[in-house]
Image (tube, rainbow, N blue to C red):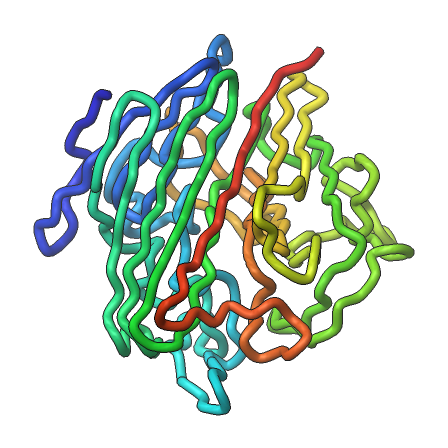
Length: 338
């Protein structure tokens, strides 16, 4: 169970890296943001995720590469969190207009504690104080990563609170299965009949609309680089797989590289998945192995409850109450075909 010092936070907190492995998969995890820093498949000489080799780049240049974001992932319109008729004002860290991924110093940007680790798993924990980023309640959260042979990475997350609050964690790795400059040649499927349309600021309107007849229909295998009306179609949208959480992971999506035969199947207990094609990504510093990450360099599958869920009565709710335990299991299963 190799580990090493990866860097230190401005306050001196040590950031460590832990390596876990089983079967064909090896992952390197750092406790800054509970980040999956590197992920490798045996016999392939490139990473399957986007990341950095140095600590400073994670502090100053990372678009949440590999992080667990929260306490409430995705966007909250106007930063307005409504609980039992009371509105809490969250920090506005996205263009001063909305709250994104837990705020300026959310879980994806903070140091977690390494609670335990062995050769194939690591458990990390973090606490959030009442009032932090505007959220009510003290929250304790835990994430466990486990590598399961021959090629699965399992994330198990949990959280508790001492006052009603919102908890919606999401694993935010960017995937590129074949080391191409972009993922537009990758093929994708999302196993959802509905999606949640958004306004100009990417905040859900409250509608749960059918994908049928729209470019968001990814129920059949299709290349990510689709053209609609002469323009490349952009994906940054939540798919409504179900209206509630499941007791066991169900399939959400599949990513496939025709170039090298690598396949990623995503399953989760969460009712939604944000598919993001990396259209806004243009990282100005070198990535893993000196790689250059530009627009569409990787794509994300963020298992979650629907964005802005506390503000839409028909959406699955992110509200967590004292005495309850938030739980999520998300599985990233890799395989290689022809």
